[in-house]
Length: 118
Image (cartoon, rainbow, N blue to C red; front, side, top):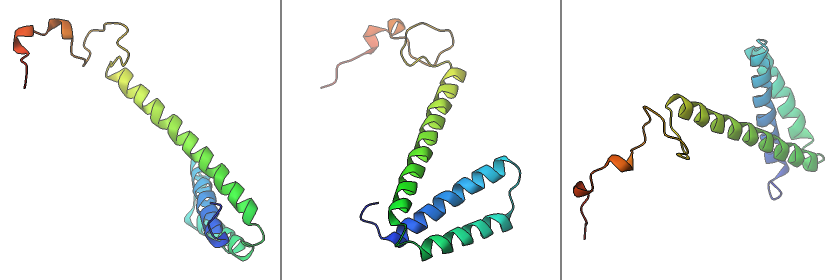
């Protein structure tokens, strides 16, 4: 972000804040297309006009927004994997034996079926 132009920083901040406006207004059931277009246009015009003067602030906002977004995404992905593994009864560490797991039990495999390949 340090080598990006101030106009690009303004565009990135506008996109990021519009995304958060969409998420928050949608979660509060207050979403309307007119409101998001108005918010996006006012924020976009304002940041583009003052982009040279507030370049450092735009960079800080963009970095903070990226860290928050990636943190939430990381937590969501990890928790989704945890839920799926719990539903499928998959034990990643194989600490305990469970019935009806999808892991292969290596103790039950017949050694005569395993052949060397050269």
